[in-house]
Image 1: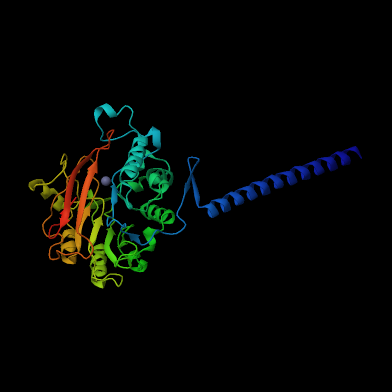
Image 2: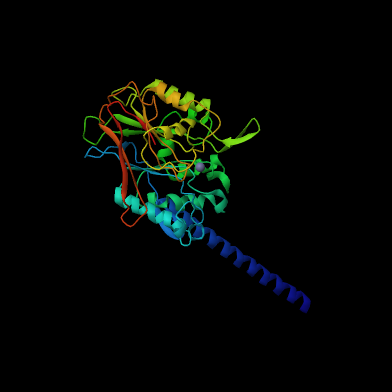
Length: 374
Ligand SMILES: [Zn+2]
């Protein structure tokens, strides 16, 4: 009798514990659901316990300002790792002791404050695979200031971004999820899926609101994936822009643009790994620092020839070589078209990571018949 009673008691307390466990589980589920719904509704993403507001819809099309300018901040080779514990590379000897990823973030915030750009272009090696255990978290921290300030941004990959927890396709999928413009601007996603690389796309920049060009494409921004590492005839080398990408460039250029009054608007190109021709700039009157050999692929893919044959590419902006920041004129680029509806000139400059963010190397890249490569 006693035994039966004890068993009964045990069973009922086991049932009670089971019910209690279920209640806790349901509660946890409900709380996480509420949390997810709250995040979805408020478009907030939680990074390091800081709330970052994501865009509700793409800021498209990009547009000139009323004062007739459109400013792009290029951010190259942040090599972001895990914040304060990731040391800097390629800084002055005196800076190694205290320099970490946080300096990169502080510098980027300072640049945004100083320039208030209309677009930030992250040109690869945004994160450094071997310095992080979570690619998504590092990427969010790296590009965090752009999101915090609500400035439109676009990103491509370098040769190191895929070295931790996400491959190149996953990285671009992640970037396009948190940054709709990357995938939304140019209609033909089917064609883009068939070409080599991840992160080839084209953004349009329209004229200022209220101007005659407000509904027209004034210029394109071309973003290209220059790959990572490849082996060619037993030799390890850097990636290059493949034939399929070159064909896509030519096709899009031939198609024209019904949003443009000129048919095929001029373009600026962004990619990570230099093309071999960049080495030749050493023998020309470039502006800036040429402090290391140009680390390009052994494969000559013909990108410059493609740009020349397209006829509308005015300038290209690359990354990869950390201590080079020179800018020069590559023969043939942009020739044959010396007028540009709506644009007078392209100017560039750099800022140093010093107290005043000193502005240096101001340079006109294009005006009338000149096109440069930086
Ligand atoms: Zn690189």
